Every structure is written in C-alpha cells, then in structure tokens.
Amino acid sequence: MKIGIIGAGNIGGNLTRRLTALGHDVSVANSRGPQTLKALAEETGATPVTVTEAARDAEVVVITVPVKAVPDLPSGLLDGAAPGAAVIDTGNYYPRERDGRIAGIEDEGLTESRWTERQIGHPVVKAFNGTFAQDILERPRPAGDPDRMALPVAGDDEAAKRRVRDLIDALGFDTVDAGGIDDSWRQQPNTPVYGLRAGVDAVTGALAEASPERTPEFRG
Ligand SMILES: NC(=O)c1ccc[n+]([C@@H]2O[C@H](COP(=O)([O-])OP(=O)(O)OC[C@H]3O[C@@H](n4cnc5c(N)ncnc54)[C@H](OP(=O)(O)O)[C@@H]3O)[C@@H](O)[C@H]2O)c1
Image (tube, rainbow, N blue to C red; front, side):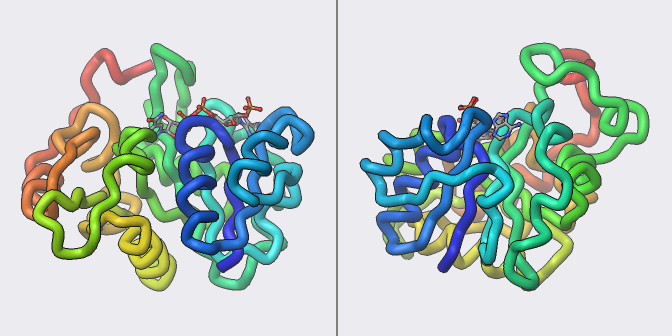
C-alpha cells in the first residue's frame, strides 16, 4: 500500500521503520526537506519527499507533527491523495509544554482531532496518540498473544477506520473502536487510556472511565 508520513520524529520515524518492513511503499517528509532524511531513507528504503508530495496517491497518510505545526502544513495537502484516503492523526495538544493556547480547542471545546481536521480540511482517524514511540518498535506481538497491546482508534469514516485498524493489526497490535472524533477526548492526554500498555478489555474499560474535564495543567 502507498503510505505518506508527514513528520519524521519519534513516531513518524518508527512508523516509517515498521511500515517499510511490512513491505509498504512509504514516502516520508519533515519540515526541513528530503535532503535531511537520507539516513532514514537508507535505513528503511522509504522515499524522502517534500510535505507537498507526501500524500500523493497515498491510501493512508499519517500526520505526526507537533499540534502547533498543523496550521503551517500547506493548504490542499491531501488533494492528491487516493480517493477515500485514511488520514491518521497521532497528535496531542500540550498547551503548556509545547503548543501554546489553541482557541478552537480551549474555547470552542473541539476535540484535538476535530480541530486538526478543520485545519487540514480532511477527516482524520485518531490513532497512536497514546502509544509510546518506542513501543511501535519493541512491543508488536502476534494475534492471540496474551501480552498483545490494544490501541484505541477513533474516526467518523468507518471505511477509513477499518483500514487503519487492519494496518495496526498487521503492525502487531489489537485495536478498540473508540467511536467518532467527537468521542476522541476519551483518548487524549491525561485520560486513563493515554499511555496504557494493556489489552482489549483494559483499554475498553479505560475509555469508558474517562472524564471530559480538561484539568488546569492541560489547559492553555
Ligand atoms: N513521542 C511520542 O512517544 C508520541 C507518542 C504518541 C503521540 N505523539 C504525538 O505525535 C506527534 C509527533 O510526535 P513526535 O514525538 O514524533 O514529534 P517529534 O519527534 O518532535 O517530530 C516532529 C516531526 O514533525 C516535523 N514537523 C514539524 N513541523 C512540521 C511542518 N510544518 N511540516 C512538516 N513537518 C513538520 C519535524 O520535522 P523536522 O525534523 O524537520 O523538525 C519532525 O520530523 C505530536 O503531536 C506528539 O504529541 C508522540
């Protein structure tokens, strides 16, 4: 499958490693340009590209940049993606540590991923946001393994969500359907499921226990 990854840091780099190892045709971009991605390209066989090129013909696009950088992404970023492309949003809003105050999230009460959708003009599937980057490399397990971790996945486009869940299964993790993007506060930072290394039952329980309250340390 053709996959475009925008952001080549902790998460983008490790997804590039694992998805190329599964045989996918991966293009990867960062903010500084493809000439800075030679080492990752040599290591993985991924194609380094500009951000504008990353989504071209892709059936899956991963946006894995700091939330504060989302408005800087070029407009029409997803225009050249394959029809019905699934766009994965791994982002987390850290207003105090990194992102600054974002009015759409704070004042309008949008979930972080709904805000991101509005910035990029395309529906997203929220996945990997509560997964430690290193776990993508170190914790895959075969289906049925009692230690297999489960990841929550939220999205409004059921076909796109299915494609993402199938991809995560191939990467070595179970998934739990965490509802639509308006429900995705249940997996944002500071919720019980965020960073939880556990299987389907515990992840399902943690999603159910979440509170929509945004505590002061997670407010801008
Ligand atoms: N780290 C984790 O374990 C983890 C886990 C789950 C979710 N997340 C979330 O996933 C997102 C990415 O996290 P990360 O830790 O992978 O971040 P990171 O290591 O800081 O990497 C960010 C990447 O985004 C690129 N970038 C920044 N601005 C950009 C722009 N305007 N256009 C294109 N690329 C741009 C950077 O490019 P340059 O390299 O050129 O600067 C870099 O490759 C964040 O929202 C984070 O909260 C992180």
